[in-house]
Image (cartoon, rainbow, N blue to C red; front, side, top):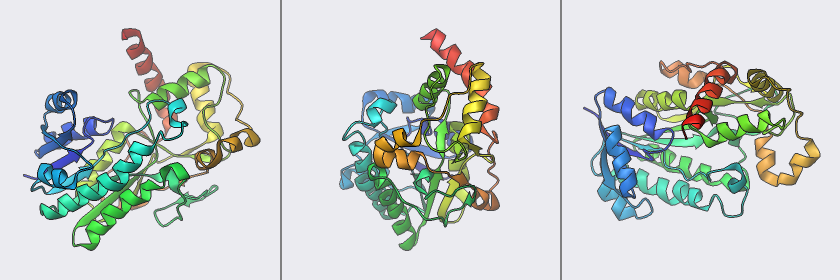
Amino acid sequence: MLRIFVAGGTGVLGRRVIPELLASGFRVTASSRSEKARAALKALGAEPVTMDLFDAADVKRAVGEQDVVINLATHVPPSTARALLPGAWRENDRIRTVGAANLAAAAKAGGADAVIQESFAPIYEDGGDRWIDETWPVRPARYNKSTLEAERAATMFTRRGGRGVILRFAYFYGADGFATREMIETVRKGVSPIVGSPEAYYSTVSHDDAAMAVLAALHVPGGIYNVSDDEPLTRHEWLESLARTLGVRTPRMIPGWMSALGGSKSDLLGRSQRLSTKKLQDVSAWRPTTPSIKDAWPTLVREIAASSSQE
């Protein structure tokens, strides 16, 4: 029976990954920093353990002897408006630098075979209409340069004899994600929530498909893997498909001069990125159950409306 440690078990991926791991017969330990998190992890079926991610000795104690360490820990601002504030990503930076390094070191000390590290695909350079694989140049924005630090921790684990697997996820979507809810409401009001050229590609992946990619990563060779839908849409197609689902007019794209006011964040968010997942699909059975977000809009809109009526 594989022993698996999960950091970030109560997030949108963690709360999907843990039940799948348990259903596969693995023993799952997950970290927490509060009683609320402990209760949530117990409800999922994991064995909770208290851990300070920024204390190397405490991380080593909490992880102990494991076969696989999965790092899904993040601290994403709870709204788009908050994400634009100065210092909004400071805690996330600490998680990706100090936290990721502590987890990789603890995994090595505990004899783990593998470390699986969550990462962010939209750090790639603009690719126009070309398919982007894992060898494409990367250029993070100022706010997420720490993404490469988290990847470096997994790469160092490989260099020290382990198997470091880095999953570069496309933009997430799901009915329980605040970003998806905000985007739907913005389009409903006739405003585009995304920037960039109408012909620029916008790669996405559902929370459910992303979680299953984590499961697939248990058995793949070390390295970097893109995780995305099979059929990325251009920004115009993305907006048009959502507007059609909502029964509203397709919003006009935000002018380039206006989006440029957002600096490096807008630059990154406006890049054309048509992600290829061929590498992951060549070495695993993982396939996105939703080929394109346009196929998911009706269900997402319905589920969000249902949950909103119950709040």
